[in-house]
Amino acid sequence: MFFMNSIKKELRGLEINYNDWAVILAIGDYEGISIKDICSGLCIDKAQGTRIVKKLIEKDYIRNTSSGKTHSLFLNEKGRITYAYCDSLFNKTMDTITEGMNEDTINTIISQANEINKKLEKYYEY
Image 1 (cartoon, rainbow, N blue to C red):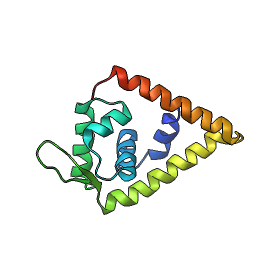
Image 2: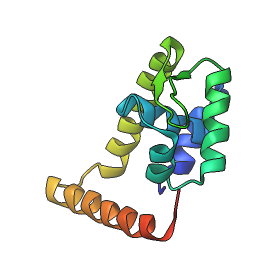
Image 3: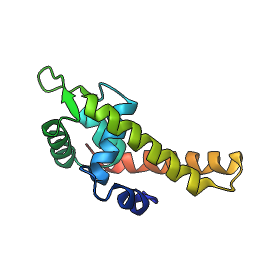
Image 4: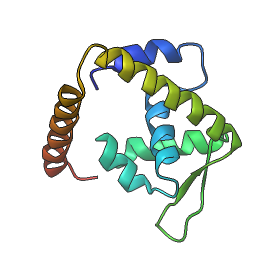
């Protein structure tokens, strides 16, 4: 992502890294999401997604309520607190990036980013 370095700087000294941040945001935004859907949304492979999820479970940020091979991921209390911080960090970063832009320009950028993501999903299987 184009703002990755800014987020990484903000996360220095914390227990989570950029990948953890992205997964916590995804779970907070879509409680009950599966690893497969996280991987698809973040354009990461299943092995990497599984490693991140396993680490976040071990650190008590999230919990997995699975039935068979289907994973449903939810935030624990520690994860909810971290999600609030991650969400505010995302919003702060987006406000900085879009400062001075009008709403039409912002909507065009978002629309183009969504189109790019759709095209990438065609080339990667998660």
